Image (cartoon, rainbow, N blue to C red; front, top):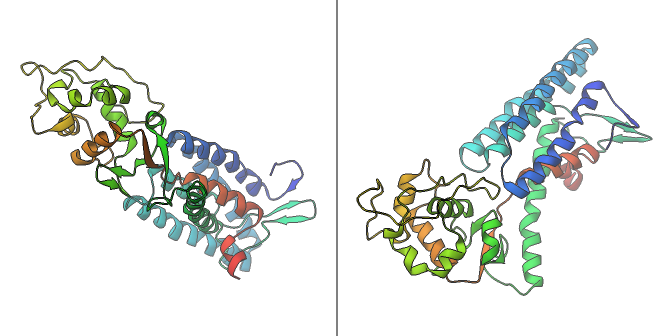
Length: 331
């Protein structure tokens, strides 16, 4: 949808700026799993301006329009969608960028916009409560629910029938350093929760190693005596992070603050104790198990996770054109 040939109130036209922005952040979410917080500030300001503008228009119209078409949907958007986004982030259901995106949408799209394109009036469907941000959220959830189905069909078509076929797929070990997601394997077999690949990259960068190094000399690097005397910055584990490596020098017991215990295979505990933060909640055991798998297997199963900003963008686009998928399906 472009501004050319579109008729609407000025606030609704301004809201269309969100479409290319959300398209861009969806692509960023797929490629890097990182979205700068700064991208949400201009949209939040735009949302506030549009909200005040709509409020003034509804106030001057008065009566039913003010209370039922503006006040109630806005109250639901700010009083229901915002807390949902915050609670899902608090309990770990959303990433920070996902929650911020929903917070911005609650401010930017509290009520249903309306666009006239030729003889068409969009969105094509509405809801009784009229809260557009909630429609975007439900659309995003429905779109997100199709992802396991797509994965299952893709794996079944390739003859890959396994317990994790609905959440992941196999990749070659040499693709792991350039892949975001989570390992779905342990030395004992397939698992629905394994090593976070961002945490793996942090560990390898901290040691100044590549995954190829680990596979070539696994016995050497299992020994914590080979930890670097001066570890490198681990970065945040992103594929695109700028990496400085000094080559992983051998640990010298008399000049390092890192204590390499002989019962710490791969130096997992030393790594987690040395870095800031928790490496995405990784435990020493998860790190060791992941390294054992990746040092021996040529093909491993990974879960790409759900880059939720992609369903959010699709949910927004569908909402602007069609409306509420839930209403259209069941009502």
